[in-house]
Length: 129
Image (tube, rainbow, N blue to C red):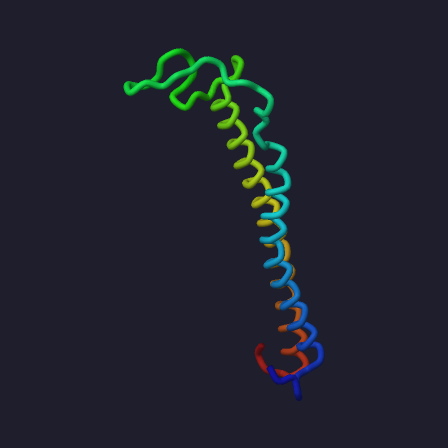
């Protein structure tokens, strides 16, 4: 976009708005990366445990366990998996909420800067901006 004969203060405002929008865009990547890092702590840990007696017949299950054989030495692995998934979803919600708050703060700053530059430009050039 040409900048010849454009008020320098207006150019600075435009550059700041562009930087703010880039920051909002970067928030999305940061939120995803932070959420992924926090979710990693909820990785399943069943290594080294043996699966106890379980067999699946054509009519469901026999023995003990669940249909998918999700009991290990008395542990309810399916229940643990669901709990981990719930915690992972909670992490995502929390990180999205933080990102949204940050984005809203940036948008408020843009709105305030816009109101300020409009007052300055209107006073300087005597036309409505």
